[in-house]
Length: 297
Ligand SMILES: Cc1cc2nc3c(=O)[nH]c(=O)nc-3n(C[C@H](O)[C@H](O)[C@H](O)COP(=O)(O)OP(=O)(O)OC[C@H]3O[C@@H](n4cnc5c(N)ncnc54)[C@H](O)[C@@H]3O)c2cc1C
View (cartoon, protein in one colour):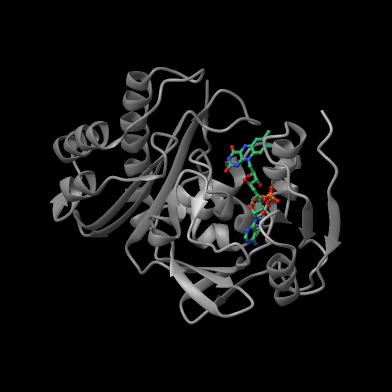
């Protein structure tokens, strides 16, 4: 199907894009990679009268490290992150970027668009919630930074005001002894995962000093499994603590049955993915180089 007619506007800068949103009103939407918005427009689930294109704004796609944080411009494509050197030192970012859909979608889709879309099945939010992540937002009135923990408020809903856009994503670089891993289970590459698990662990010798576990696709927003993290924190990572974390994950998630599987199937899957992700995160925390890829049905 073709989208309904709309007016196309090309922004020359991010402040200009925010001003355009403000002037064009509620019926205007930003266009980044178009990998969520354009399919929704073609299905006529989204019918904006005005599209404000960010793709020609210079300086919006970058990855740099400053003051202990990695900063991503909002229009940094998934594939740029997949192929960047940052993925070697911060492998959970590579796990995520390299696993999103297929190469065409990764070449167009952006990290800023993904977080702004707040799709419950999206990969970036689950991964970045295991990290200290700030979203820098810009509107004609102000610039503010919002912790990712407060940014997504519901399925497809964020704190962004109508004329506010994501300018930058800032992720604190984890300290020594910390490792992360992200695994998803998918029916095939160009579909969203059935369930996913992001794990970040800090080890001191054999003891887990800190843990963050987030599950994707098993709730209206990514599920932060705090009881599962508590089951690991200040303990040895062994069969007993991992089994306790898996039990806590089964309790924490709230999956919906759909074409990808029953709620019980997804609950079991989430716990199994967490187990595998913990194993990889611990090995990475110990300095091992471990490559993983998503699991395909
Ligand atoms: C077949 C298919 C499979 C996919 N599989 C996956 C998958 O497995 N995992 C996954 O995570 N994603 C998947 N995606 C989605 C893809 O990752 C998109 O890139 C992402 O969801 C949206 O990014 P975008 O840049 O394309 O945003 P767009 O589609 O351009 O925009 C999405 C929304 O965000 C808003 N927006 C965009 N940029 C900004 C900004 N800077 N500030 C504020 N609002 C903004 C837009 O107005 C729009 O409402 C898939 C998409 C398709 C078509």
